Image (cartoon, rainbow, N blue to C red):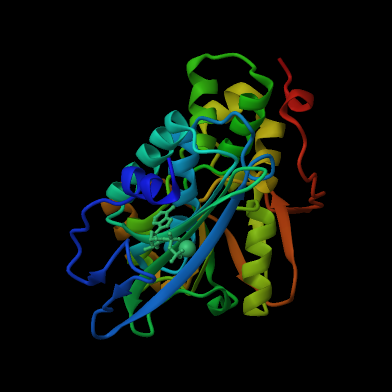
Length: 323
Ligand code: ADP
Ligand code: MG
């Protein structure tokens, strides 16, 4: 199978979007942005053995490659529109390509995203690079830099699940329902695109917490030139994470685990009721975990008292498990 055949067979699909004037097949794609909207452009690369374990199912890799990019689009409060895909493969394995394309197009369909181009090449390891262009009403995109002292700090979902899930997947530890849930949180992240689009009008800043809640909230606060506190007793821990890891390790995963693709955002006190209305409409779990303060550092409190947070970094799940 040559490159042309491969692209035709697995990636060239009919494009329904009238704003795509030219899709796969020419040297470049042509899209027409809507009047009054700005474009938001993100790209993320997944390298086998670095960002996903060798042996991960091809459909999960395809889904995940799109989802992690969509999370960046969500963090900007943008709407996903168009995607390009740069794929490096050791060889054209038909079963792998079939699975990968199925996962990729599942995510694309879920989030109204069109694949409009890409590049395919041969290399020593699998590398998947997805680039997404989104759009947002002019001047409404959310940045990291808008937080102000007094704002609440919020997070979507239950951070920590994906990092625990990756550890479980790698150690092959158990297969009960709770463990399956956690593994699934790693394999199929849920980018918070719909909820985050509504934040454009009500949040002051946002960030995608792909590298861990504590570190990423710290980046948001630094970009905003403010400090903040996170109250550990407020961290939303999933029932499954606590059941599998115990409370102490669950807290550690929630603070420092990566790969969650949840959104942390800040919002002024005057917007709290608007945020509550958005949350109600979305059926998503959204939790206030702290407050933006003057200063330049992020601190943790527990039951209101300052505690030192030691950044544990990545620890293999097998060493954390207490069962
Ligand atoms: P060129 O060598 O001129 O760049 P390519 O053979 O790389 O052309 O690509 C031909 C067409 O197929 C282009 O429109 C390109 O965007 C598209 N394409 C290539 N690889 C992929 C891929 N993995 N997914 C989607 N489209 C692709
Ligand atoms: Mg090319």
